[in-house]
Length: 396
Ligand SMILES: *Cc1c(COP(=O)(O)O)cnc(C)c1O
Image (tube, rainbow, N blue to C red; front, side, top):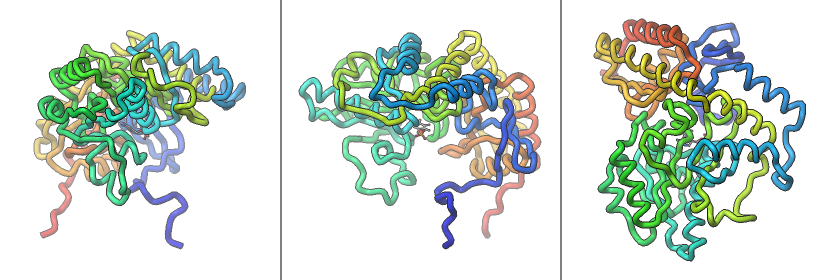
């Protein structure tokens, strides 16, 4: 037997965290890491945040799980708060991002089915997108590394170039159900869609009675300095998948929709054993208590500006490695001139955690609770590491 007990689908690094405190993680031997990855945009409140920890502990001792066969005072309360805070009128809770997207895709298809147009079942999606690892969500992307070996994939998706409104418009047919996109792409390399593009898609949806479906699993929940990224574009989607930050590390997600968009989602059409369980709802409440505050979101914007400004000053000192910074708020990416994956690996050895992304980008996704001192520490240590970094040897 050579297979490892943990199915070997991840290239796991030597970082083996066993404890977290604020913006820092600690390994088995007490090694200390500055965590500017946040479990890939998940730990919004850092590690061991007292409000979140207490909420989970108290709810765990009260009631962890029942079933969606029963009334859910906990789910109703959190759904109401999300409805009050967003474009949405209704919420379905899931356990992950991919499930939030599955619900979003089903809601969009079901909308047209409900109105007697079952042939309108194709979502137009975009290059370099990431929507999760289920068969449905890998079918929605054109990324070969996600799809290879998993055929047959599902029909019902047409992929066009991201941020290209003309291509999106040209792809419309009588089968189009709507558009599905991350307004700011995460895994694809921290690429914000332009205002013209996003507003143009909204207009096409309005003109053709189509569903605008946003995947805000990574860019949502305060990450960009707004509760949701759509607020930067002065438009609203019809359906939105949310996860990652929503539980601050507790596994949960949500599909939000307007009343109009959810017209087809009637009793019996969808479900989840765990989705919306009382423990998840307590975590969700605690995170929202902190994140959905003007002062907190302003803090994210301010820290994002500081971090971006400091990076922009530092990058030219290492212009053999770094090209530019992009992104919004604390969802930042540094485009590299060398392999970003190798450099992210090197930073880990130096005790700094970041995440690689497509397009040779190093993602900087700190907890939203960072302070000036963490920005300064990160930029200083990144600069030191860049100075010491030997370019990987190219085979002769
Ligand atoms: C992480 C991510 C997902 C998938 O979330 P899981 O919880 O891993 O299923 C979907 N969409 C985007 C944009 C993501 O970043």
